[in-house]
Length: 476
Image 1 (tube, rainbow, N blue to C red):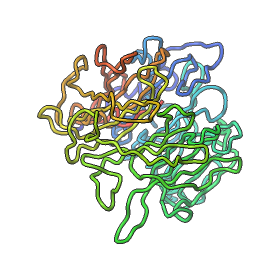
Image 2 (spheres, rainbow, N blue to C red; image 1 turned 90 degrees about the vertical axis):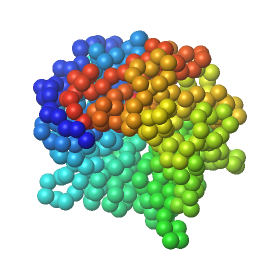
Image 3 (spheres, rainbow, N blue to C red; image 1 turned 45 degrees about the vertical axis):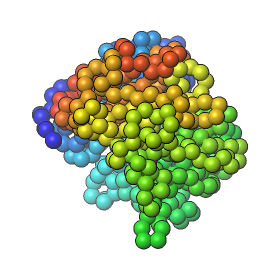
Image 4 (cartoon, rainbow, N blue to C red; image 1 turned 90 degrees about the horizontal axis):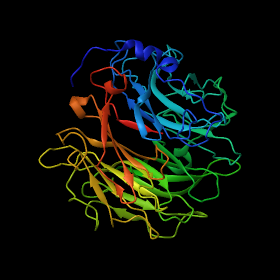
């Protein structure tokens, strides 16, 4: 891995207050993913291994703002723990930004950005992990706070995974955070004030309740009742080993309650792919099918478990891979189909579509170049029909596929210009020998197209040069 010296330290140190041009809005839009309240969705991009203040792997987050023309790199911020007002200081291997989620924690109508700073060492206590909130507001993100209370008694990489939602149906946004120490799942009940105080902390030992530890958490409304449910994915003990498994915790007035188990994996998204008003659970397992990985497949696979008013539909879950009819390409061992997932309506037909990252896909003769497959939602659900594949060799997409770029390591479907069509954002953390880069592909009635696609990297938005894994995580 190539290492260079840090540049643009001043930008990193002052990003909260000066990097974003001043704007004014009459009132916040209340739109999910809109940090500055101007009515357009914005995008947070992590560069978790970037060198900051001389610390290797300290990491930073770039925020690129949406406009009527879409995401524009002219309107951006660079935020790290060297930035004025951000709690803590850069730490070697702190990987600031490698866990991100969004939500309006204080109920002011602006989306906030939450960083699970799970690698942050907390002095001599032996504890690690913090939850840093970058608060949205008119003109963009200007202030930041750690959640200071209440906090779990023991912290071991608190913030390993983070998600937001209204889990108790009271109208306030709550924050869920994984903690490797028991209890493994912590629910910070909202509203959460800008001083860092949550209303209440609820600890849930998912292993004791379900036999599944908390490794990855994803929020969404599976039952369609307006209260957020939480998918917990982790390892379940089986004879002579462990296997990946998921369990749905259903939201209720009394909080989250353990429910049915679902197909395991390492990535997931909850979205209504059949337009029945209930969220469907899409899990991605990039591993090959085996006893330990029953939901894998040749080159990886995704599993769709449909939602219902009571939790899960009686419908048999559907597994989709590159050997499914209609899905472009050929399944090859270790392609890593399902490495990353995102949901959005790419053609405006009212059905939610799913972008699937194929991290290790060989493109032409270039190994691990990477690709993204977009599967189309429909009345009958998610199928391979009409699926399309995109890579750096797609016509109109800048650059060319290269070995070990890992295009599609992160994917995001988002409508950043408010036209009703979700564009595709794809990250390739291996681009330019691990510097990393991001591509944006436009969409319309025919879906996503490479025509007019753009790309940018960390230096484009004012970040430091050198190995960064820019684009390894996307949120908005």
